[in-house]
Image 1 (cartoon, rainbow, N blue to C red):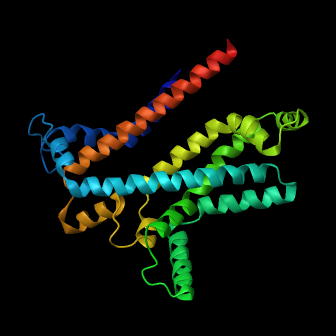
Image 2: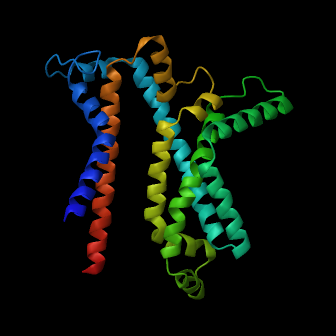
Image 3: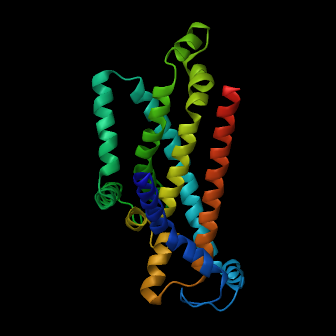
Length: 268
């Protein structure tokens, strides 16, 4: 009994440390103060300022555009890569699994510098000025997120009945149709979780973004870094981050609810 109480207390303490800063940010997004800790009464003025700030809204559009485009590309490439690795031979599978894990644990600064050197090398060969831009930024985010899609999709492939694909081929389906009709529906939860993880990583990334973007293209991470150097974060960012947190939380709740509902239907 004592062990259970201590264990639960420890878990709740860790959760408190994790989420207390976020809850403070949400609470103080509803008061018009520049510093967290000062309460000037309940107000929606910060949210009003947010929707009137054209610069932040433009940066937000850039960030969402990069996150969505890179996540779609990463999800497609990562899903195909995971399927290819799963159906490879034992030696090739071990090698490719190891390469994927190296990409995940590799320091992000190493990836960022490597990509920068690669782009500079390509630009020098092709003799292109101002080579860095939206395309290089997307490539950088794809390189960052593809391994995480592979890691999310692979467990779903292992849970799948391996005979289903062969049965579809025996019934006359082409390999591409069997892939669309049998494999993809079975691994869709892994694909979806990989896509959401890509979105989160892209929204959060600063290092690769800073190294692979054009200086005129701002995302939230680079914008926050810039305004912090100038003299502190504007209070409108509290409202913006509250929106992002609540939207992601709502998406997770919807996905978990649908997943639980499907499980109950299968059991029924």
